[in-house]
Length: 310
Image (cartoon, rainbow, N blue to C red; front, side, top):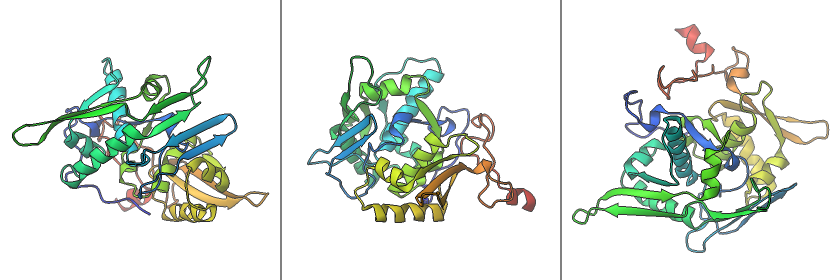
């Protein structure tokens, strides 16, 4: 488990252009820790049923398309970013998001064109046909919400060439309202899109939501993570996969550590890399919060070894 290489042409563009790579990437926080998406690359048709405490999530697959995956969720992250950026610029966002597939694919750090265009359409179909029911953010008289990740999507093509001119996607109210509400989104690292493993991606989102900027990070038992993941793997296999992620230490911004508590439970602790000792090889300094006008959104955190060698 590791990060794939960035696609060709994946570099910092002109900072004065309103490009996706210039702006903080936002993820809707309610979708980040609980099992809303399949973590497997193989099609999954088994429903997700999560009931912990007073919170429940149920996700059902269409028999033709299967469940939306955590890679499909990149499209929703892209949409969340566009909507939040529109708000930051004083514009009025809409649930209907217009885009060109080339720009979207490049923004989520995939090669624009060829097979990725077909994969994008398949992802849009899975998002449109995956049914979700949950009581997250249900209050007052509303006891639950039922929706699909996308209400619809459209594609307009040139009649002569068959090339795509543009596309649209319509977000459900539940997701759109979650993006607009105060504290509804969290900034994530752009290298998240390069993570190749489903559990690896999910662990980063869990770390980002819970460990955040906290000095002591956050920790879970392995069993708690398993219940939150919605994984169809056996618990023992899930634990092996998590240990591999910890050993690879490939999560952006965060490192993960394993230990046992007094009851003998295996604990996974997430900690921001800038909270480690400066001489720890896993340490990275925090990046500039306004890096769109500094060295760009893709500026890296400094490692102490880099400073010494310079």
